[in-house]
Length: 291
Image (cartoon, rainbow, N blue to C red):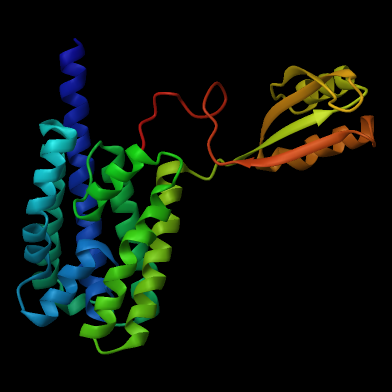
């Protein structure tokens, strides 16, 4: 039974990868490439080489991925690499296919190209990541870096690895503005990719030290329906032992939680920090796999 479920899941993943590759191909061939935007990574290099040599952008993308695929096999194993090879092949195919058969429908507007082209490719990359594969190129490098630096978000690593391509684009297109447009594309891709991978469920982590911890906790539980934990702490100067309330709340509930604390104890000591990801009941699953 488990093998049947696993096979069904893999089929669904490959269908999602195919759909994502179509989005990527449409975004690249109809919005990004026609507007001389090099959106970083191997896609950006493929667009630049297409201008220099003339070979299709999709074919360049596939050829440049060969050495990176060898690295992926060594680092992640064959199962991951097979999915990645499929994703790369589909992206290459759809990019050149759309370029050839939908050339009459390209949008030659840099702002629209940057905005919607970057959005399409970012959604595509995110969907591929969620299917335990990558779209090749710097994605593989980023996945390796994420293993070493898991606290750094994928979007940030994209920006760092794509900066070099922007300089090459400026030289080839002989246009500094082209590099600036490309940088905007990288930023938009990074932002949307993080939304696809991590969601917009960022929360606030609140620590409360008060003379009325039980009353505050009761109101938090009853009025906001959130969990809370009591941690016993001791003041370094006074030596006084107190309950420290620790609770995680959705961003939209944070102001209400702060109001409750102020109502019950205006002199309470409160620390509010941002938490980009929270796992557990009421939040994300521990078993969610992300890039």
